[in-house]
Length: 201
Ligand SMILES: Cc1cc2nc3c(=O)[nH]c(=O)nc-3n(C[C@H](O)[C@H](O)[C@H](O)COP(=O)(O)OP(=O)(O)OC[C@H]3O[C@@H](n4cnc5c(N)ncnc54)[C@H](O)[C@@H]3O)c2cc1C
Image (cartoon, rainbow, N blue to C red):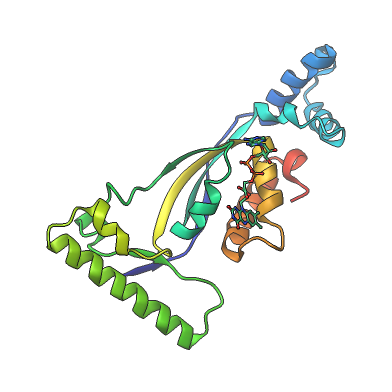
């Protein structure tokens, strides 16, 4: 059983995103003549200050997220994004490419005793999964015994408006600590890439 860390990495971001947004947004005012090499940032800041968020839908970002199955149930509730996710139907974790083991994400804030209980539970689930496979059960059925903390990977694509919405909800105090951590990593990347849109996060 492999224990791995959750991670968010940027796969793709609209090239020259601010300029793309400015070119689209200035159609509203027919003010394309005001476009200069440095005008996009101010234009986008003004658009956002007026709450005209539809304009930032013209730029998108894709992230590769490594987290657990429990968390991805929450992530995929965001309906205005697109997803591709590692499938426990099609992946057989007894295969060589998975080093014949399951991978899990450790829950946060466990003390040593709690961590031992969690490890035992994961090891038991792994043993049962491999026993079912050895008995001829298909991976898509054997997955029934895999734990919620099973590592999974997904690529999530959304436009900038949806990413702002995601970050507002998932950085908030009431959100699950693991999704807050993932959202924090996403926010750091997006605010470095595009501070005019994501600087507030
Ligand atoms: C702290 C927290 C606790 C939660 N607890 C639970 C829980 O206990 N149980 C549970 O089931 N879920 C829970 N959720 C999930 C929550 O109900 C939403 O499904 C999830 O946060 C996605 O939010 P959203 O619908 O605003 O976003 P998205 O689906 O990303 O949509 C973005 C926005 O588009 C608009 N939109 C999208 N679809 C429609 C539509 N069909 N009609 C009208 N407008 C639409 C809305 O303005 C929406 O805010 C929780 C979420 C959070 C953040």
